[in-house]
Image (tube, rainbow, N blue to C red; front, side, top):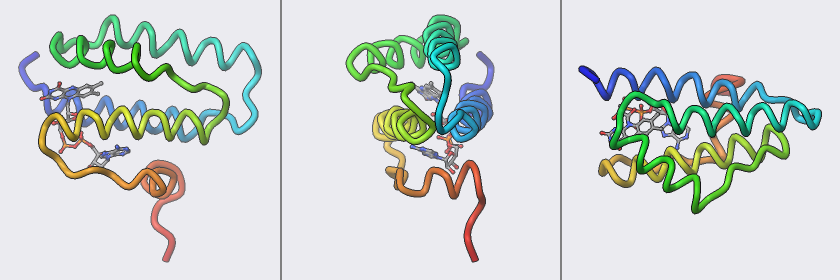
Length: 106
Ligand code: FAD
């Protein structure tokens, strides 16, 4: 696509926000549909080199849809894998809810 960075930034916003609002105690159906969503996402993300690496990473590190905590942690690690590849700083995954759910405490 014309702008891999803008696409990426906005996509991470959607994905982390979805994970942060995923139920703490999801129903089986919700777990299945979240897993299906990420499988489809990894097939259709419109940046082919991003998509190929992401699919590979998902194959090595299967999604954990158990609950909000596990899904958010899993996604944070996947994003950190991309950060590493791009030479960006690692994000502190203990801060994932502060960043994507509650906002900073002060
Ligand atoms: P982004 O990485 O877009 O992050 C946005 C915000 O998320 C940050 O400002 C920070 O507040 C927060 N954040 C950062 N790390 C984490 C984390 N681990 N967990 C939670 N929150 C975090 N670009 C490429 O050039 N090559 C690729 O192969 C590539 N693969 C990608 C694969 C996927 C699935 C996605 C969604 C994007 C990919 N991108 C890729 C785009 C890339 O990840 C960035 O989105 C883009 O470079 C813009 O970076 P940014 O510095 O604005 O911050």
